[in-house]
Length: 286
Image (cartoon, rainbow, N blue to C red; front, side, top):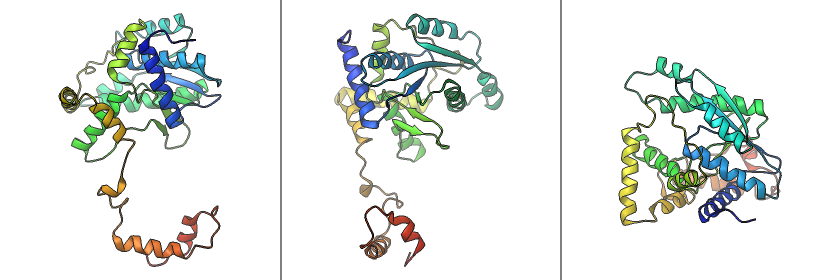
Protein backbone atom coordinates (compact mmCIF):
# COMPACT_ATOMS: atom_id res chain seq x y z
CA UNK A 1 0.00 0.00 0.00
CA UNK A 2 1.68 3.19 -1.20
CA UNK A 3 1.60 6.51 0.60
CA UNK A 4 -0.66 9.14 -0.91
CA UNK A 5 1.92 11.70 -2.04
CA UNK A 6 5.68 12.19 -2.34
CA UNK A 7 5.55 14.49 0.71
CA UNK A 8 3.87 11.84 2.84
CA UNK A 9 6.38 9.27 1.62
CA UNK A 10 9.24 11.56 2.63
CA UNK A 11 7.78 12.22 6.09
CA UNK A 12 7.12 8.52 6.61
CA UNK A 13 10.74 7.67 5.77
CA UNK A 14 12.12 10.36 8.05
CA UNK A 15 9.84 9.40 10.93
CA UNK A 16 10.62 5.71 10.49
CA UNK A 17 14.34 6.52 10.57
CA UNK A 18 13.89 8.44 13.82
CA UNK A 19 11.90 5.59 15.34
CA UNK A 20 14.62 3.14 14.35
CA UNK A 21 17.59 5.33 15.30
CA UNK A 22 16.32 6.13 18.78
CA UNK A 23 14.09 3.12 19.54
CA UNK A 24 11.04 5.36 19.93
CA UNK A 25 8.28 2.81 19.36
CA UNK A 26 8.09 -0.80 20.51
CA UNK A 27 5.63 -3.64 20.10
CA UNK A 28 2.57 -3.14 22.30
CA UNK A 29 3.13 0.59 22.85
CA UNK A 30 0.20 2.87 23.50
CA UNK A 31 1.36 6.25 22.23
CA UNK A 32 -0.25 9.36 23.63
CA UNK A 33 0.16 12.31 21.26
CA UNK A 34 0.09 15.74 22.86
CA UNK A 35 -2.25 17.37 20.37
CA UNK A 36 -2.37 21.15 20.71
CA UNK A 37 -4.07 21.70 17.37
CA UNK A 38 -0.99 23.37 15.91
CA UNK A 39 0.67 22.23 12.69
CA UNK A 40 3.43 20.22 14.40
CA UNK A 41 1.22 18.02 16.56
CA UNK A 42 -1.25 17.51 13.69
CA UNK A 43 1.54 16.40 11.38
CA UNK A 44 2.80 14.06 14.10
CA UNK A 45 -0.45 12.24 14.77
CA UNK A 46 -1.28 12.02 11.05
CA UNK A 47 2.05 10.43 10.07
CA UNK A 48 2.02 8.13 13.12
CA UNK A 49 -1.46 7.00 12.10
CA UNK A 50 -0.21 6.22 8.59
CA UNK A 51 2.77 4.29 9.96
CA UNK A 52 0.54 2.44 12.43
CA UNK A 53 -1.49 0.94 9.58
CA UNK A 54 1.67 -0.41 7.96
CA UNK A 55 3.68 -1.40 11.02
CA UNK A 56 4.60 -5.07 11.60
CA UNK A 57 4.05 -4.48 15.32
CA UNK A 58 0.91 -3.71 17.31
CA UNK A 59 0.67 -0.07 18.40
CA UNK A 60 -2.26 2.07 19.54
CA UNK A 61 -2.55 5.87 19.45
CA UNK A 62 -4.52 8.25 21.65
CA UNK A 63 -4.67 12.03 21.23
CA UNK A 64 -4.75 14.24 24.33
CA UNK A 65 -5.49 17.95 24.16
CA UNK A 66 -4.63 20.21 27.10
CA UNK A 67 -6.94 23.24 27.22
CA UNK A 68 -5.10 25.99 29.11
CA UNK A 69 -8.35 27.74 29.91
CA UNK A 70 -8.01 30.80 27.70
CA UNK A 71 -11.26 32.10 26.30
CA UNK A 72 -11.85 31.29 22.64
CA UNK A 73 -9.65 28.20 22.40
CA UNK A 74 -11.33 25.86 19.91
CA UNK A 75 -10.65 22.52 21.58
CA UNK A 76 -13.98 21.17 20.35
CA UNK A 77 -12.82 21.55 16.74
CA UNK A 78 -9.71 19.51 17.56
CA UNK A 79 -11.87 16.76 19.02
CA UNK A 80 -14.22 16.75 16.04
CA UNK A 81 -11.32 16.44 13.60
CA UNK A 82 -9.93 13.48 15.56
CA UNK A 83 -13.27 11.69 15.66
CA UNK A 84 -13.75 12.23 11.92
CA UNK A 85 -10.46 10.42 11.35
CA UNK A 86 -11.18 7.65 13.84
CA UNK A 87 -8.59 8.74 16.40
CA UNK A 88 -9.24 8.24 20.11
CA UNK A 89 -9.37 11.68 21.73
CA UNK A 90 -9.33 13.09 25.26
CA UNK A 91 -9.46 16.74 26.26
CA UNK A 92 -8.39 18.08 29.63
CA UNK A 93 -9.55 21.52 30.73
CA UNK A 94 -7.09 23.30 33.05
CA UNK A 95 -6.52 26.68 34.67
CA UNK A 96 -2.94 26.96 33.38
CA UNK A 97 -3.71 30.34 31.83
CA UNK A 98 -4.87 31.76 35.15
CA UNK A 99 -1.82 30.37 36.96
CA UNK A 100 0.51 31.96 34.41
CA UNK A 101 -1.27 35.31 34.61
CA UNK A 102 -0.92 35.20 38.40
CA UNK A 103 2.73 34.11 38.56
CA UNK A 104 4.42 36.03 35.73
CA UNK A 105 5.12 39.72 35.35
CA UNK A 106 3.46 41.47 32.44
CA UNK A 107 6.68 41.71 30.44
CA UNK A 108 7.74 38.07 30.93
CA UNK A 109 7.35 35.41 28.23
CA UNK A 110 5.04 32.69 29.59
CA UNK A 111 5.95 29.91 27.13
CA UNK A 112 8.51 28.14 29.33
CA UNK A 113 6.26 28.02 32.40
CA UNK A 114 3.28 27.02 30.24
CA UNK A 115 5.27 24.14 28.74
CA UNK A 116 6.23 22.84 32.19
CA UNK A 117 2.67 23.02 33.47
CA UNK A 118 1.30 21.32 30.37
CA UNK A 119 3.97 18.61 30.64
CA UNK A 120 2.72 17.85 34.17
CA UNK A 121 -0.83 17.45 32.85
CA UNK A 122 0.40 15.19 30.04
CA UNK A 123 2.21 12.97 32.56
CA UNK A 124 -1.00 12.60 34.55
CA UNK A 125 -3.07 11.93 31.43
CA UNK A 126 -0.56 9.33 30.26
CA UNK A 127 -1.21 7.39 33.43
CA UNK A 128 -4.99 7.79 33.12
CA UNK A 129 -5.04 6.64 29.48
CA UNK A 130 -2.58 3.80 30.00
CA UNK A 131 -0.01 5.30 27.63
CA UNK A 132 3.50 3.86 27.53
CA UNK A 133 4.97 6.74 25.48
CA UNK A 134 4.19 10.47 25.22
CA UNK A 135 4.82 11.80 21.70
CA UNK A 136 5.49 15.50 21.17
CA UNK A 137 5.61 17.37 17.86
CA UNK A 138 9.04 19.00 18.09
CA UNK A 139 10.64 19.00 14.64
CA UNK A 140 14.15 19.44 13.23
CA UNK A 141 13.99 23.24 13.41
CA UNK A 142 13.08 23.08 17.10
CA UNK A 143 16.12 20.90 17.81
CA UNK A 144 18.67 23.13 16.11
CA UNK A 145 17.11 26.39 17.32
CA UNK A 146 17.18 25.10 20.90
CA UNK A 147 20.82 24.07 20.50
CA UNK A 148 21.80 27.53 19.25
CA UNK A 149 19.74 29.30 21.92
CA UNK A 150 21.54 27.33 24.62
CA UNK A 151 24.91 27.94 22.98
CA UNK A 152 24.48 31.69 22.53
CA UNK A 153 22.38 32.65 25.55
CA UNK A 154 22.56 29.90 28.19
CA UNK A 155 26.21 28.88 28.07
CA UNK A 156 25.42 25.22 27.49
CA UNK A 157 25.89 22.70 24.68
CA UNK A 158 22.53 20.97 24.65
CA UNK A 159 19.39 20.67 22.58
CA UNK A 160 16.64 18.14 23.34
CA UNK A 161 16.65 14.33 23.17
CA UNK A 162 14.55 12.33 20.74
CA UNK A 163 13.78 9.96 23.61
CA UNK A 164 13.65 11.11 27.23
CA UNK A 165 12.80 9.19 30.38
CA UNK A 166 11.30 11.36 33.12
CA UNK A 167 13.29 11.87 36.31
CA UNK A 168 11.15 9.40 38.26
CA UNK A 169 11.38 6.83 35.45
CA UNK A 170 7.59 6.68 35.09
CA UNK A 171 7.25 8.24 31.63
CA UNK A 172 9.00 8.14 28.26
CA UNK A 173 8.74 11.20 26.03
CA UNK A 174 9.48 10.74 22.33
CA UNK A 175 9.92 13.20 19.46
CA UNK A 176 9.47 11.27 16.20
CA UNK A 177 9.68 14.38 13.96
CA UNK A 178 13.33 15.06 14.78
CA UNK A 179 14.31 14.67 11.09
CA UNK A 180 11.24 16.52 9.72
CA UNK A 181 11.56 20.25 9.02
CA UNK A 182 9.03 22.84 10.10
CA UNK A 183 8.28 23.60 6.44
CA UNK A 184 7.52 19.93 5.76
CA UNK A 185 5.20 19.72 8.77
CA UNK A 186 3.35 22.84 7.63
CA UNK A 187 3.01 21.57 4.06
CA UNK A 188 1.81 18.15 5.25
CA UNK A 189 -0.94 19.69 7.37
CA UNK A 190 -2.12 21.71 4.39
CA UNK A 191 -1.98 18.67 2.13
CA UNK A 192 -4.04 16.53 4.52
CA UNK A 193 -6.43 19.42 5.28
CA UNK A 194 -5.84 19.30 9.02
CA UNK A 195 -7.54 22.15 10.93
CA UNK A 196 -4.74 24.20 12.50
CA UNK A 197 -5.94 25.80 15.72
CA UNK A 198 -3.98 28.71 17.16
CA UNK A 199 -3.27 29.06 20.87
CA UNK A 200 -5.35 31.72 22.61
CA UNK A 201 -2.63 32.78 25.03
CA UNK A 202 -2.17 36.57 24.57
CA UNK A 203 1.59 36.09 24.23
CA UNK A 204 1.53 33.05 21.97
CA UNK A 205 2.92 33.68 18.54
CA UNK A 206 5.18 36.45 19.85
CA UNK A 207 8.44 34.55 19.82
CA UNK A 208 11.12 35.76 22.17
CA UNK A 209 13.57 38.17 20.60
CA UNK A 210 16.29 35.58 21.05
CA UNK A 211 14.38 32.87 19.17
CA UNK A 212 13.42 35.32 16.44
CA UNK A 213 17.08 36.19 15.97
CA UNK A 214 18.05 32.51 15.81
CA UNK A 215 15.41 31.86 13.16
CA UNK A 216 16.66 34.78 11.10
CA UNK A 217 20.24 33.61 11.48
CA UNK A 218 19.40 30.14 10.19
CA UNK A 219 17.43 31.59 7.27
CA UNK A 220 20.40 33.81 6.36
CA UNK A 221 22.78 30.84 6.51
CA UNK A 222 20.43 28.75 4.37
CA UNK A 223 20.61 31.27 1.55
CA UNK A 224 24.33 30.62 1.21
CA UNK A 225 24.40 27.02 2.45
CA UNK A 226 21.08 25.23 1.72
CA UNK A 227 22.14 22.10 3.64
CA UNK A 228 23.01 23.93 6.86
CA UNK A 229 20.04 22.51 8.81
CA UNK A 230 20.96 18.96 7.89
CA UNK A 231 24.53 19.65 8.95
CA UNK A 232 23.42 21.01 12.33
CA UNK A 233 21.10 18.08 13.11
CA UNK A 234 23.93 15.68 12.18
CA UNK A 235 26.23 17.58 14.52
CA UNK A 236 23.90 16.87 17.43
CA UNK A 237 24.49 13.15 16.80
CA UNK A 238 28.23 13.52 16.21
CA UNK A 239 29.54 14.82 19.53
CA UNK A 240 33.31 14.66 20.11
CA UNK A 241 33.87 15.11 23.86
CA UNK A 242 37.67 15.17 23.59
CA UNK A 243 37.43 18.43 21.65
CA UNK A 244 35.31 20.23 24.23
CA UNK A 245 36.28 22.04 27.44
CA UNK A 246 34.05 20.25 29.94
CA UNK A 247 36.45 18.88 32.56
CA UNK A 248 33.86 16.27 33.55
CA UNK A 249 34.42 14.76 30.10
CA UNK A 250 38.12 15.58 29.88
CA UNK A 251 39.79 15.19 33.28
CA UNK A 252 43.34 16.51 33.74
CA UNK A 253 46.20 14.26 32.67
CA UNK A 254 47.13 13.19 36.19
CA UNK A 255 43.56 12.09 36.88
CA UNK A 256 43.45 10.06 33.66
CA UNK A 257 46.74 8.41 34.61
CA UNK A 258 45.46 7.55 38.08
CA UNK A 259 42.33 6.00 36.58
CA UNK A 260 44.42 3.98 34.11
CA UNK A 261 46.64 2.74 36.94
CA UNK A 262 43.60 1.77 38.98
CA UNK A 263 42.05 -0.11 36.07
CA UNK A 264 45.19 -2.23 35.67
CA UNK A 265 44.45 -3.77 39.05
CA UNK A 266 41.25 -5.27 37.68
CA UNK A 267 42.66 -6.99 34.61
CA UNK A 268 41.68 -10.39 36.01
CA UNK A 269 38.09 -9.40 36.74
CA UNK A 270 35.53 -11.18 34.49
CA UNK A 271 34.09 -8.99 31.73
CA UNK A 272 30.52 -9.24 33.04
CA UNK A 273 31.43 -7.78 36.46
CA UNK A 274 30.85 -3.99 36.68
CA UNK A 275 34.12 -2.23 37.47
CA UNK A 276 32.80 1.01 38.90
CA UNK A 277 31.47 -0.52 42.18
CA UNK A 278 34.75 -2.40 42.61
CA UNK A 279 36.78 0.75 42.04
CA UNK A 280 34.66 2.71 44.48
CA UNK A 281 35.05 0.02 47.14
CA UNK A 282 38.85 0.11 46.75
CA UNK A 283 39.74 3.78 46.16
CA UNK A 284 43.37 4.41 45.36
CA UNK A 285 45.11 7.64 44.59
CA UNK A 286 42.07 9.74 43.58
